[in-house]
Amino acid sequence: MSSGVTTTDTRVTSAIHHWAPRFVAQGVNLSDFEDVTASLKSWDDWCSAWSARGAVHEKLGRQALADKKYITAAEHLQRAGVYYHFGKFLFVQDLAQMKAAHMKAVECRNLALPYLKPKGERVEMPYEGKFLAGILRKPEGVEKPPVLVFACGLDSCKEETETYENPYLARGIATLVFDGPGQGEGEYDFAIRGDYEVAVKAVIDYVETRKDLDASRIGMAGISLGGYYAPRAAAFEKRIKACLALGGPYDWGESFAGVPDLTREAFRVRSKKATMDEARKHATTLSLNGVAGDIMCPIYIMNGRLDRIVPASETERLAREVKGPVTLHLIEGGNHIANNRSYEWRPRAADWLAEQLKAV
Image 1 (spheres, helix red, strand yellow):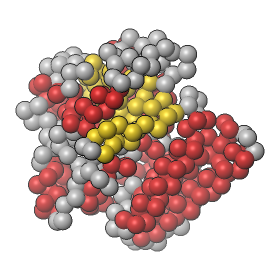
Image 2: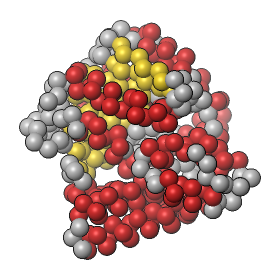
Image 3: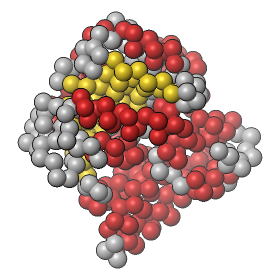
């Protein structure tokens, strides 16, 4: 995929190189991707450029709402939220601009939620005196469905995840995507934490309060850094009956030196550390060493063999150490989370979870 970009700013070229397949897989129109990235001369313009293109789709969505064309409105507003999100996703050098784009992403997806098929619901789950924000969607025509609790990654959040949600909803599984500590709406009040099972406990406690969900059939999934969070939680939280670890590191401290500069800086900021040395030390607390052996539930472990952020060897290490039933899916030619080969794993992963949770 070529954007035609001619910038000499290595931060821009790095972002395009690493994330182009992800943007398109998550709903960014290819022409928009090419137009926006070709216009950039500096990383400093990244957030404003994506926000401006997000505003184009937001305007279309708001007009459709005014015209009572609700399916059209949902499509435009969902896409606008993704664009605003990608404006802010690693833009941590200007936190005010980043947060403004983020709040637009939240606003647009919230506007879209009642008109999605199936519709969504914003939920706020008690956590450490405040709350974790999430989006709950339930499959139509299913009474008390099983539920997939979904953890995002370092630079993703619940406004990005519709394309992840839909395969599970189509198979009769409710989805509850949430912003955990250091993620999305949770990044302002809470720092990234290695013991992510604490946050997951709060989410599952909330699920148990819902009479419209089957809390005896809970799955847990996570992408990228969330692919560490999900198996970490499964090792401690036995209410999780099946786990999907998608593109996650085994030991973030060991991976840290090899990730792009933008990603390391975002980790520092969202860990609330003053220096990169402090961030590097904090990264070592995100590890499955001595923990993976406590994972007893069935687990589906996936990544691309060509992932430069999380080497396939880490994916294989996790598969060797868990004690429960393991399905290992390494995708030839796949990059990080195999975004460039998403058709090879997204339906298969959803089928696997539907079998584990006995979904309709």
